[in-house]
Image 1: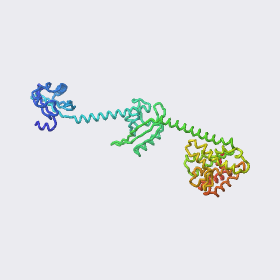
Image 2: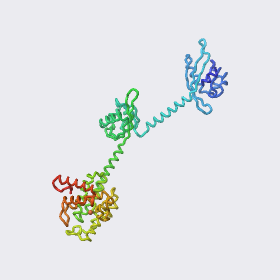
Image 3: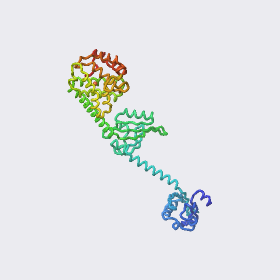
Image 4: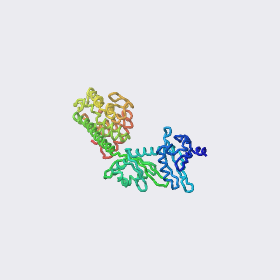
Length: 444
Ligand SMILES: [Fe+2]
């Protein structure tokens, strides 16, 4: 019998009505002293006091003939172990004759429960303390079933107030809620920036990460993480406005620089702005990206700035230039490059200016570059420069006209000028002529 009980891992104690052990058995490792030493001893002699107290308490409760369970712990060889004991009273002929305690070790189960509790506490604390709002919402009623204090704080409510809030009341735009819901059901999750409403009616920007969950009964839930990004959005807006102001300032400075030429030669100022205008049309026609087009536009506004170093009487000379005078003029791309290369433009403005008089066959200046040696931006600027120069009046000749300019481009398409840019220019200019039966393709 003892062997059978031991194999079950149970401890069995039988005590007489004086609470003296008459029988004790169980795995020896579950005892503080060997079980045989219990026999003949009163319980308070061989059992720790707190366990004796538990025993008597259970005994008081089981005197009505029902067994009583109680848990106890023992530190055996330095290790804390847990047991559950069941005390039954033995009655013979209606008289109490003794007690039986059957105990079973529950250390493993107890430790597993303690670990679960520890993890639950840890995750609950994490849930409460994370700096983002977390909540679970029922999708048919919009009730917020669970939420952490941060969620209530984000929306300006106390935790108690927030218990009565439904999520749809927090949306600024009801259509956004519909959009979130349908995306959630179709994709399973949503990652979206939204405007939502605080308790005081102010609008906040939140990043919402939500997952869809359906339980076994077919109820749908949203599991949501909210992050208040209002400050980030405000900062972004301030940065955008600042950037816009800087861009306006930058353009004003470039225009001011371009207008400097007005004091040297009125024609050059106007010419630069008209060429810049035309490069914009060409960039559009050639499907250039916005950034490249802007670089060409800025370079065009400044492309003749090097003429600042050419004496005014040469620039406005009404008669043909001498070779020496022309050599002086031909230096203007290099002077322009020298002026602009120190400026840290986000585009190769100085290089474009340096190359705007180069020609595909190597007949241009200052370096006689050929074909692909000439950057694409400079090839576009060259075409716009020629068209504007020939269309306009010069001190030493009247305007040749847009038709003559386009004729020059056609004749030298692929020889002097990039064929694709020429084609784009012919198309742009012909549209300009058709529009108002004039040659006005320029803003200025
Ligand atoms: Fe030029």
